[in-house]
Length: 117
Ligand SMILES: [Zn+2]
Image (cartoon, rainbow, N blue to C red; front, side, top):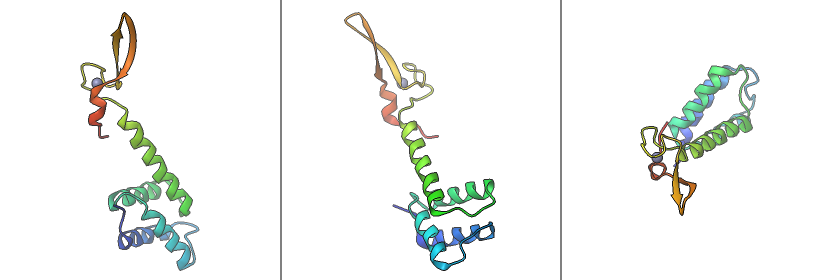
């Protein structure tokens, strides 16, 4: 699943008031295509909101990609965190297990459930 073309075209128009917005249709289309690499319309919209809130100049396709990559990395990280209410790991994602008198850390079962932000 990815973001829809019509939706991304509309999002790119929202960026058109920013400085250095692409002057050619082709360059604007590149931005649309890059936004379509978002997981869905909602993520594409969040990327544009974030950009509009923080930056005066229009993004280049590589800026959009960088934001999308950062979001993927963040999601990967969240998978490894445990449930904050877990009695075994208190949310660290790891619990201590003693085998033959030696303490070791193992991944807590609660991490398999995944935690949403
Ligand atoms: Zn746990």
